[in-house]
Amino acid sequence: MIRIGAVNIDTSHPLGFGEALEQMGRAKYVGVYNDSFRGKEEVNGFMRRFGLVKHCDSLEELADMCDIGFIHGCNWDDHLRCAQPFFDRKKPVFIDKPLVGNLEDCRRVEELTANGAIILGCSSVRYCYEIQEYLNRPIEERGETVQLFGTSGVDEFNYGIHIVEAAGALLGTGASWVKYLGRSHADGKYCESYYVQYENGKSFLYNTFTGIWQPFSITVMTTRTTHAFTIDSSRLYTALLEQICNYMEEKPSLLVSVTALLESVKIMLAGSASRAALGRAVMLTELNPTLPSYNGGRFLQDYAASAGAMYATL
Image 1 (cartoon, rainbow, N blue to C red):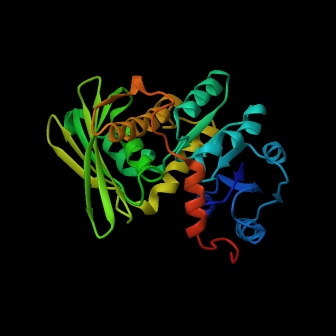
Image 2: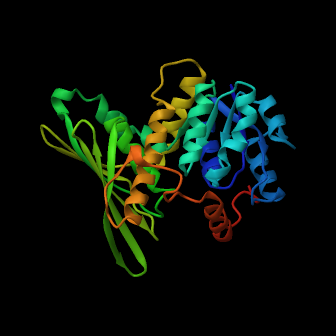
Image 3: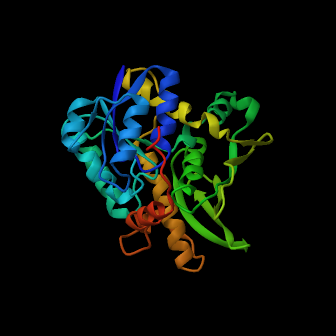
């Protein structure tokens, strides 16, 4: 049984992951460390629900008692601090989406992995069964992908990263530039559109929708026909966790490199920079720390202010 250490139970993911892990029977949460906004009663509820062994007093104590760390905090600017004790012990870390939110942290991730850190992640949509099934079809049947269109809802980055990672699963790496196309709005909610050009001539158009949940829907135009599918969110966690368990059990997995994970972040950073530049196309190679980034601390504050109790009564 793979022993998982949970770091910060901010979101619903620890609950959803824990339920999926129970069904799978291959891994379980054994310990938790929490220094985010959820209080002791919530941590105790999470521990009761999944039979955790220990509420650890430090990240180091948690890293010592588990095989892999799961960083669940919704402040992506804090992810690398939370992961460091696992890196120090040469243990892998799953970092929940978004991996990071600025270029400096992207570079830090690159340095860490160059020095041996093992980072797994991030979006469950990247590994969804619908994409797996599509890619398993012979290319003679489905055709060579030319262009993708994808949708996401709730917010720009925390949820928008899902659909960009999904595109990474279908197109691979090699994004060249991003162009912000514009905004549509109604009833206080708005949708923004971005165009991504790849070095190999392929492209990706994605929409983020702020203010309401939207399904993850994907349309793939190929050299043969057009394929369209909507992701079944009820199966997402199992699809991801199967790949993590495969990796931990030294079985073949679909987990991708940190380079691929970071490209998704850089696509969104370039899109944000293009919006600030009134729609000028922004090359991924021209990203620099002075351009707009995503503030994880501010997101945490907003999330905590609106989040109700989730674990206390479990």
